[in-house]
Length: 99
Image (cartoon, rainbow, N blue to C red):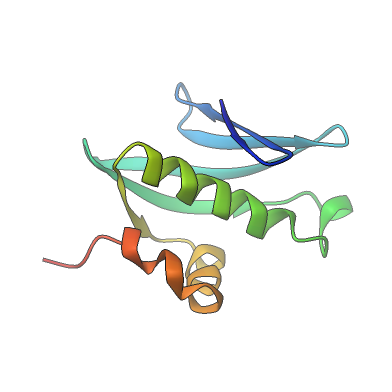
C-alpha cells in the first residue's frame, strides 16, 4: 500500500493495477512491466460518480510518487496520464526516454 496524504492507493500486483477506493467506488490505473524498473501505464478509470473531483489526477500523482519511491521509471501509454504530464511537467523526471 502507498499512502499519499489522505490517499490510500493499493498496488494490486496480481492483476497489475493501482487501486484507490473512494466512497465505495474503485478508481484504477492499470500497468504492465516494461522491464524490472519500468512501469508502462496503460489505462486510467474513474467511476462516473467520482468524475470532476480530481480523483484521477490524485491517483496518477500517487502512482508517480510510488514509482519515485521505488526507483522506477514510467512510460505513459494512457491518454489521461499523458494529459496529466502536460499539466504537471515536474513529473516528467520519471518518464523513461525513448531509446
